Length: 470
Image (cartoon, rainbow, N blue to C red):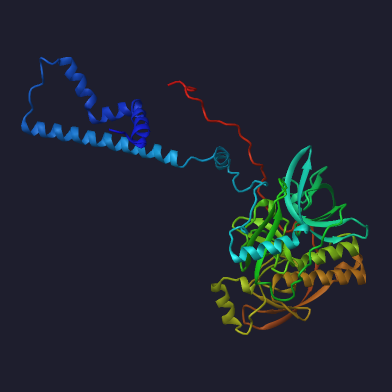
């Protein structure tokens, strides 16, 4: 009679697995091994006396239990062997699981624009429309590759044939996480046509985690969509480019009301999923307009709106540096507050449907000195109604630029701002003056980043038959 493949190979392998220590343990536990040895010593001529009925019943029951246990062990081992064969994991993926590097390879790509849906077809058109502006950048130090990020062309210099590429400052940030550029770092830029050119660091802002790299190439610009007032809530695309092979990457999503793991208050979130290689790439709408610069987070993607990025570039062009005011506040847009907290706010002042909820006031800070408290709601700044954290950040940067143009660095301590708040205690509306301080490095936003790694290249580790002693 023909024997099935499973009954043959897998069954023999399972039975063979029981021939060693496990088999001896089963025999010991069931008592069968001892009985067989005893019968051999007594010989066939001297069989054991027949047990009493009660003893015979107990012996038979014990033997049956032992055989059932042995069969259960064999069945379990067979199932384990079949499960291993059915779920064989490639050696590279197994290595990544063991080392915990599965999610943090700089060579991992992303994208969901090839599923054939109508939305994916529209996304592909947009991605192709702006593809010439998307680059990949890699940093090197000591002859070793450090990090890889995506980037996009934001502006051109007065010099013909020179373009500026915006990307994440993670590309050149010190490996220990400090706000320092990697010593002797060099940047290579992979353009959309596959050409690799040298990049030169033009601007670094570790507070907002952005860097501008200058390249000797005349590249297509991305049109910026400057948000004014409320945030963009439509469908969006996160774009990037892989350094290995130059693959254009595109992930679909929408802007969502969530908070970021980073300390930057002006960040907004999208449901697009990118890899580490996508950090620094643009978030665009379906008109191809860039909304912000993306940063990698697990299961979501944060982005710094162009409302902030454009002001950083303007300051650098005007003063050769970027200067930000510090108030000593942490706040969140009411749109992003949990419903339980929002209910308490609404009970205090039901007429407020937009503003910034103050969640922390640093002791001795300008905000503390002015009398702002946790639980208050910022509703106006310099007579302008507040609706989002990026908008408030942009107002502060504008006020900083105007003050510097009028008075210069020497009069910074005289920079004053007017804010209107709703008091948590009694719901009253109060106007406060704040004397802003210059932002110091100790107050920079935190941008934690996992250590990067590269895809392991393993040789064939499958052992040859007979390679191990039996």
